[in-house]
Image (cartoon, rainbow, N blue to C red; front, side, top):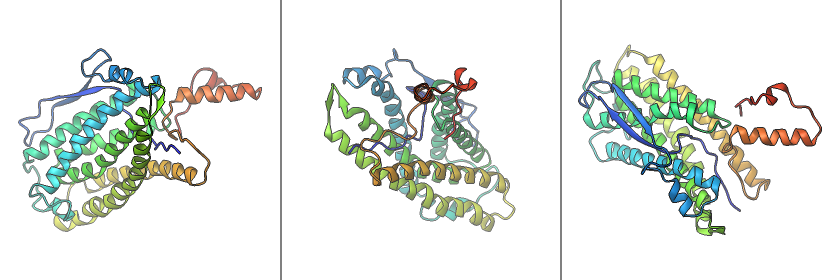
Length: 320
């Protein structure tokens, strides 16, 4: 039985990040950061590789997107591991320490500033890509909100010197994206050249299970335990009357609600598998609105029903 996990992120099919004007990588806020999209003719494009591997056309079109995101998230998460476990920062094992010696206008360490530069660039591009470049999917509105909230947290946490919390937040979220994109690539590669490849199918099944568990563990257990505890409670113990307390905690709670929202997709997927409702599961979210519209249109025509005027005009709500 082939298992395909819910796709929770969506960016441009191919992109390379470019950044500049970081004010010396120190206390200055990034002045300009962006992701520069590359088309299929760019040397950075992986779509010709997908075609060379004889992937199915739909999979060949999706492969570059997942490959580039896997590269970014792997580098980002690896750098987060370095910061949290191979330096003197105690934030992971001692979350309240993110506010020790905090003061307004404090210098941002260069190694943390580099992480912020990369993440700000990535999510700045992601907002544009989700709105204008990517295929519109069922949860694209929520995804767009996620990118806006994330970029707001990144920018303002840097500006107001909550960067220690930011490193912890990014570390706890990037791991799931690494698993997601790696699993999706194996899903795309299990049918290539008209031949079924069992190894890729097995790897995608294992990836699906580990992704589901790690999503709960990192985003719904460790995130409240370490991040929300530190920001909601420990911050007031270390810095009474800390500025922007309600603003940042509200954004973090919105991020938590979105993590719960997407976890419901995972629970729905697992429930269908356990009840035997599916043999080969397509992503409960990984289809675009256009496909949904075509399916709905076909069913209504078969039933002899007249389509609503909104559907005739090509408008489909992007809700769940």
